[in-house]
Length: 632
Image (cartoon, rainbow, N blue to C red; front, side):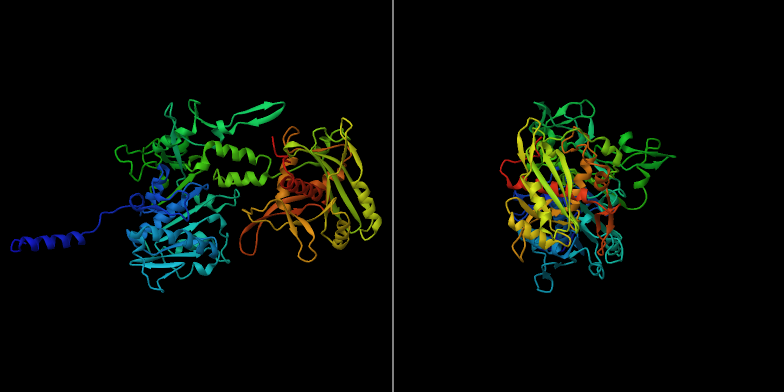
């Protein structure tokens, strides 16, 4: 170098500077510098600024020490953005083959179109790395120097074969089949794709579904099970934000419960201070992710939640050991995390989120609106609380139900509507007349049979007569059946349709549909549809959903909203039929877990009539202005 001119020395110095390896960075630093929120997938666009609770997770996506990263989450916590920026990081900072699996091929294409394409467009630093040839750049596959990113559907075994990648991501894991085409668990199939890399990583994220059948819960329980601890702004005690500590003020006016969700606050478990939502962001900035997985060390099992003994390097907040549980005897990190590469899990729910529609008040409002509706409550627990839904194993004793029967033969004074439902059999019609009150509390007035083959007109004449009867409230006010709903299933469909056509203002056709068994099926219990063949208007009933609610309500106390009252006219046979089914879970041909009801005895007409009643009142609440029985 001494014999070179100054100009030559500068040129060589610049060359060596370019050849010098870049310092090791991580996904968090990358996202802070380059992250951008695209309009296609974000309500707020522009530079990405991670929330405090996202930082450790972002950092872990680029950590070679972690072989499995699990995020058991609610919606609205920014999971998709973390996936996107980890993909971008592995394109430019740590080029490698990577595959993202979605529940099906359609979802795989949707992610590529709505998430990956805008990301490559809005972050040129990343997009410029993509090879632009047609063979190397299509919707679901994009190559770059050192690797590729490919999106695939997760329900076909062929999509796991012949693929090798350093990074595998499984998105919405609970929607994957339990057994992929008979070849095994989707996680195990995906993990095999990374075995060529000593530092391969599988990342899994999902909202949970049904307890004991949720795949994300199972994988989360294999990890160190980290929860976010935040300090109380008054006493400084670190604690997990839990929904059970969310205090929703309520009062009774004229015997009716009123919720004040707008004043919802979180109660500190230590000093019992009521913390307002305004403090959440400042609390989260001081928050810490901490291991809760029990572990065995020094001859005994230890629970980090009880011991509250974690590793913390106060001089380095990025120390990889921060938050790991320590043995109270030897002071070493948990045995679980000592051997081999780590399996790290994060649990987070909407209570930590900073989205505009996830304030504690909004969460409380959603909870209140879900009361007495099993499907809404299931969705609330899964998608807001990131908790599994535990199906109630309702065992109802016929004698107990009979003993709860009451002495009344009138319509309650506060009844809003009187409805009749009809079940069609080959040799009879069976009907139930029910009064509905606020809170969807109901009073069964009378059940009856009209014997005779429905092919005979006298059967229908008798039904019409029943539908036109006068009923009276406790105060003597006359009440009539507002509308009747008739099952058109079975062998008498034509006879039912002909009768309803003659009395369209009084009777409505209905048909049960027990195939609405998908865990996240969003269809309502009752839906009006028009038949293509003869343009008949039919109420389709999601029977499995309705039975879930009815079995929950049969287990309620008499003062609870939604309680089903019976008078003394209902006999033992009625109650036997009412409890004639039980819920089971089984796998379909594709390996997905489905719930269904099976008969425990032959006759179940009483349960069917209750199902039709619930569907009918749900439908009318959609149709009639200001008619809302769900108000508390």
